[in-house]
Length: 360
Image (tube, rainbow, N blue to C red; front, side, top):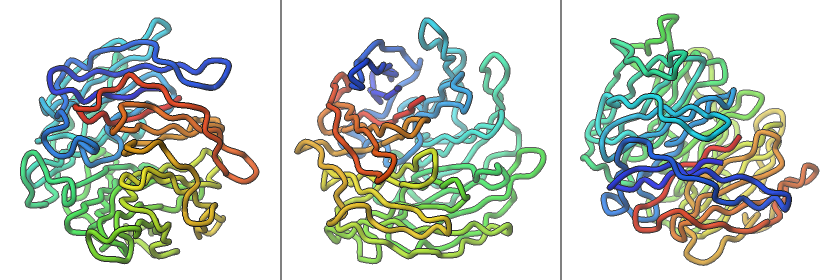
């Protein structure tokens, strides 16, 4: 497991290993070579306002990290002796917050100012080469550093790698760019207005359905206990067809979402409620809550959970709790999807707004 400090005086990756009792333990720290944003720029308990700031390749060989404070992206190799920094390049914009990878094509979301997406190719030695002509402005009209409630939140490839999606909280837009054979996005995206208010993070299930976490669901900005998840079908032309609209979980600030490897369950963290909401996903992409009241797990008071991730074997769920500077672990019941808490381990800073989680 890898988590990120986002420290302004020197960004670091913390490496956790799982022992026989299934509780993660802090094993090592490695510098990204860049600077994080620190917690004072936006919010100490959600410093980047994004999902995907730390990304592990499918083969587990490469780890990529954003350095929001120095506007850079780092490439690190996963070796038997630990992480090794292989490259660090300008992100192509201001305040990089999210990464996505398909094959050797890496895209970064820069959320500062107007925001943009910029592409890179990943070489055999982990070298990152800017893809000429790949930058597309999001015309978000924001600031640098960006404001948490309105900034672009995530960039992600579709499962086939032919589409690139971006959520923008302030405009409630979900942009879908078609990727050409040259790896470049189309000049203009197909844009769908989110069903719910403030679309944040997203994930795809194994059938290709898009699940989007919404801070305030079908309610207005700032409404408590109104978090939700909407499921969509992604059409070949980039349009999004609503399957289940804003399935409420009665929790506050639903921001991050992850799907288990079998595509049966989705889990969302609720920052202000310090809870996790689980959903069952059927084969048609429809959703229903796993637990009454929308609470599949409660975290310690003040946790302020941000990123979460499911292990590749689907057995465990992990969360980064920025408010406590800790990592929490849960076992997933394969038959019901219910979560069993395993414990918490510290090591992450609180004041710098720790973010990012990648699990092998």
